[in-house]
Amino acid sequence: MLTLGQQKIDAFALGVLGAAVVGVTVVSLVVPDLMPWSFLAPAAIALVFCWALRWEITAWAWLWVFSHGLLDWPSWRIEMTGFFNMTVPRVIFLAAALVFLLHFLIRRWRLRFDRKVLWVMLVMLVYCAISAALSGWRARTYDVATAPYYRFIGSLLFPFVMFFLVYNATYREKQINWALAAICAYGWYALYISYLQYAANMGLSGARRWIWPAYINDPNFGIHFDRARGAFAGAPPQAFLLVLLFYADLFLIRKTQGHAVLRALSVVQAVLTPPAIFFTGLRSGYLAFGVCGVVWCLVAVRKRLGAAKLTFAALAAFVAAAVFWNNITQTDRLTGGMAQRSPIVSRMILLEQSWEIIAQHPLTGVGFGHFVDAQQQLQRDPGSLSGMSYGALVEHNLFLNMLAETGVVGLVGTIAIFILLFLESVQLYRRLPPSTSGMLSRLFVVLFWTALANYLTDATFRDPLWDVFSNGLFWSLAGLVVGYNRLLEPHSLDLPRGVPAGAA
Image 1 (cartoon, rainbow, N blue to C red):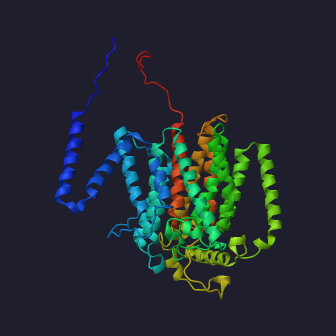
Image 2 (tube, rainbow, N blue to C red):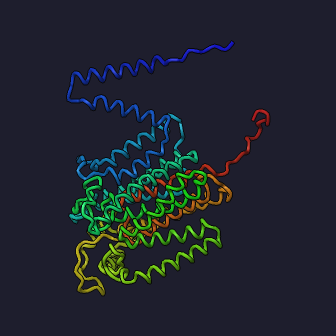
Image 3 (cartoon, one colour):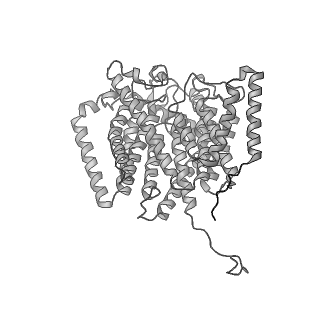
């Protein structure tokens, strides 16, 4: 006969919970100044344990990434002697690392360090740390005094650690949904801010009062106030995000057939994104958008159809350039001007200076984060640019910067990381059947290739190690790709000798 069983109650856990509640209450009564933190702290700890045990762990990676575009408040900063300053994104990163580690401990997962790219990343971290330690964790030039430790911690250490954590936490296909949902959800906010900023820059009074957080409207905050820079301190992170967002929408349009609402939202977002890329006024963003389009058309679309779309896009670009030629040839970025010469001249100066620095320190460079220090020691009119006046300029190319600051050793390590990462994605692409219809498909790998092309194009015209957001977004996405490649690796099924088949 069927009977209803009694629910089991863990007396020990209940006792611990009761003791914790009593203890917190007593502490709060004895030291009232601790309120409400005495109650909030245990609640936060309980939430961390619950998340580590039951909820999607990689969501913390995206929470950390997009906190840089929403919660990085300049006024909220805790200065700590002998330690890096604490900001909201950094607090979230430390919390995320704790949740990841608890997740691995509770589930007894073995942390894997079994990829060549991981070893090269570790070597680069150690090498750059030694380079910065020997040359100084603070630069001598006041304007970039924090460059060595800021770039190392924010754009190397944290993104690489998150890559490692996401790689080890990847175990199911639905984790792609979390990544794309975070990108697209924040994308709506980025588009909202972008259109309002462009309207304000074009003279629409009152547009900025609808922008939140309010510090974005401060012209003294960051650079590129005359462009649609989103919630960031400059336009490059916004352009990087929007380019990736457009191709993520194309991916979702293909993968959400049968979900009319989601597909419609992806279509609308994809239509709104190219104008927002234009609003950034960033020529490297335009170029990255085009390069990613070539990658998408050649790989993600059938050969004949892809070639046709590429040809049509080229013709459309040619016609648009002919129609708006007067706008293109002027210097106002807001109306499409691309003829501004000062950034080009600056990069020519930087190229001259970089080669001069590299010639003096070819093997190990001048020290990680010390490019400007070395630049200030050079003659003020290098080579054929005699007569030009300029101040301190940071290098605007990732690979030239690594060569100048860390020498041939650092450059080889940097290139090796990207090559190994690309090879991991190629392996994943080949292991996935062409007919796979789920999120984890060849099309997802192509989406990652657009992200890689976007990052490398951006890195050709600026040093992204100043940009924590773009590095965090790119390397977190890369962690998923490498993690899926590990999951799909063929494993040996050979049995040990002497073991009977029945026993096995």
